[in-house]
Length: 219
Image (tube, rainbow, N blue to C red; front, side):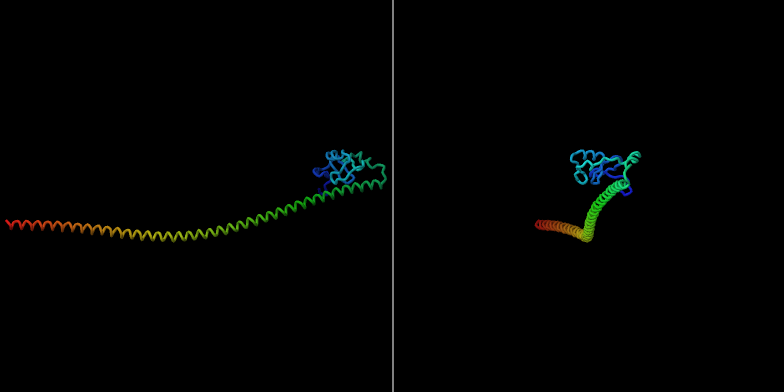
């Protein structure tokens, strides 16, 4: 609650609603809304929900109007001596100051808790960022390593491709030489076979002529 805020807050831990009409005030300087004051202070003995103080006297609890009418304001302290009026005002101001001070402590506590939580979140975030950066660096190193391996494979593939092309050229050359030799051998074999047939035919013809000559001489 800001210092300039003119509304008090219910001191019930789970409420903390703004008070604007009626409220319950305790001798231990706490104030509660109508709902929680009625629920807590109808028990006997009454206990303050804010500080757990026992409120045994009837004067320890008061139900007050936060926005009294002009008539009530005119008659509220009428007839009292100035020192009593000042004492009442001093006590009322002390109550208000205590409420503002308690609210400031509460807000400072919340701020401290939020700041601690924020620092924890920042620390966790920093750790996560550092972890991700480490993972990223590791991945970059792995990518660079894989690139080197890929380049090595490309070089080896290029070398093997060239060797394979050279082997194919040699194979084609040898295949041509082999085909040429095979055709040449076939031609030589055919010529030898033809020559052999011609000689065989010639030999048979000569033998036949010689036989006929002998036969005529005998006659």
